[in-house]
Length: 214
Length: 214
Image 1 (cartoon, rainbow over the protein chains, first blue to last red):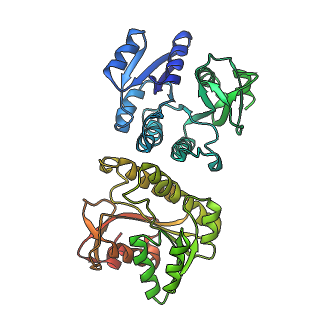
Image 2 (image 1 turned 180 degrees about the vertical axis):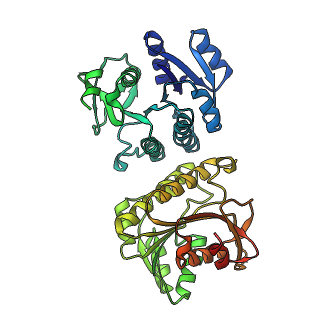
């Protein structure tokens, strides 16, 4: 499977790229914004394409050509303002969905955030961030694509444990980024996750088993 | 017709309230955030209800109960940041649409902004504003409500001329707020505008004629 990773240079993105490269079934295509990032991935033997989430749908669609799946794990990051949240986490995500449709890529996996599907659980400090993720998720759900929406809890950099709790509604909790990446790989290979949107935090259930129970 | 004006205390909102009161066919219900605003409208003989666009859908739905139409002309304004744009112009508008559905109000008129339906025309200085208006418009269009989306050009405070140009796509231009208000009143009374979304600037055609030609 050729998998376009939008947000490949982010923390979860790098885990996904590495795991895809380590598998013998997949090929990662890292979508990045700068020549430097492109060169860095290529030095590691990873295919990379230049495209800007703030650019046109056509630009992203060209990057998605030939891919079998798109993973969206881009984010404007905590250091930027609500303007970038709007243009990357909402508009960039929506453009990516439209680009996948335009390029005939049917499979789309979205990295969202825990609880954003319930307005009363939106982040008090940054409700606009929760709103951006929520509306991007809805756009994907209405796109007609074969979607999976993973809504991880608080992201930490601990090594992955391979065990999670996944369900439509969960209380807040944390999860290593590496486990999120692992769940995305497992979702790519698991048609049962198509049409599913779920919260996910660290837990006691092996990832594949947790996904199959959704 | 009982018309709930969301954003009644704004500049276009006040024109709409006044024009509704002057007509003998309609009753304005001004939705406002503060007791002071409510008292000010009531002093002028205008019915007013308290509800916060940053509150719950239920709160807005209660304000909409008994209305025959909702006009959304709220905006976070130029002096706030993108966070408020997201929560008022996008999320507040979407909540208002959901509130109208919840209260059984079928008719919904949205005050949007010229050109936001074309990404390449989004405001360079504040693309997040254009994005917010665009996605709110799409939400309304997909709501199943009897919508009209008016996308005025640059808003000015000159007296209305009663003459406009209206079409799906127009080059940028200006329009007095009073003419926007007049077009909204004319749309309320004109079922031909249901399901229509259009740019509007000052022009040479009487408002009613311009609307009928859409």
